[in-house]
Image (cartoon, rainbow, N blue to C red; front, side, top):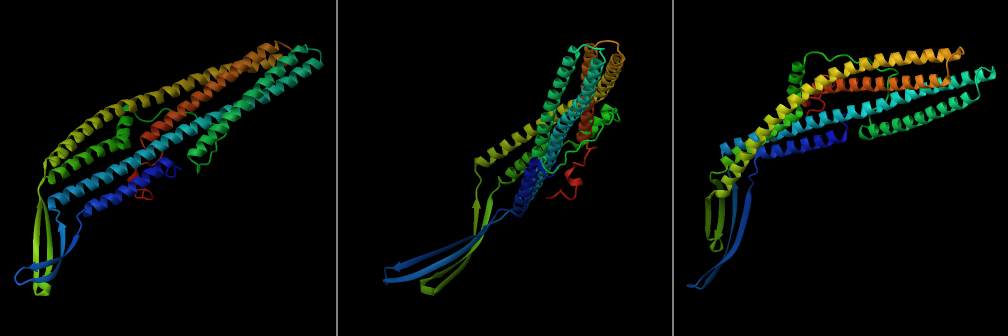
Length: 386
């Protein structure tokens, strides 16, 4: 699904195009030039006219130093395109996780409201039974029916949000089947330490790779401009047929293109851009290091938040169960039962959201450290060179 996503598909096409451009740069852009001329020579004494013509073939020469600079730039451009492909794959993975857990959250809420609907229907049946026995006033039926109507509305809204979340997921990743397990797994604390995670992230971060490759591209361009500050030789051969074929001329011509001041300014501009890109890569590494540590600490905290929310939800659920039990035995009021059940449901919704948040945080740090899916472009032979 990731390799088929629009972002990665575009990056794969750009990588393939850049690979072809790099091949052209390695082979050189010097091309043959063919020339021809036709002329007429007139002599005053004697008064004669002669038809003449000539052909020429020439080609610029690429010196070895310039060829090496071109090959270095071609390699740097290919490496940058490959890093961009890896970054697109990584960003698609983040997008997939966000859409997936958003849909999973709506699925979980729909299931909770479906369970609440069944409980509320049972509660209405209990109220009707007590009314028939004369143990409860008819007004309690109104309250029970109102509670049931509210639950049905919440379930309908939750189902709509679930379908919308599924549509967003399918629109971005059409080949991915959206199927959720019946129960969610329990979040666990991430393995290792924060320093281990930070080092793993920096060792696989495509955004950082792309920034470094960009600096290398600009540095290679600066070296290429430096090599172009020398003269450009041009060598060719020519043949001329003169004096109506009575004279034949075969020769060799050599030309030199003298560099101007623009080549030096191009080199200085590329060197300035390269230095700026290197500084940007250093700052990016510092930012990514801080963000990775913060993400790891957040993942640890989310597990603790889920554990606390789970304890609170269990207590609220037990209180709701006892209130419903007491009401069925003729004790307590329906209002107290409805209040306890609403609190229990809110607690269950909170614990589910906390659970999904913790699971999403765990999946995110596994994704960024390449422990969830193999996102290294060169590690996937089927897709390394699309």
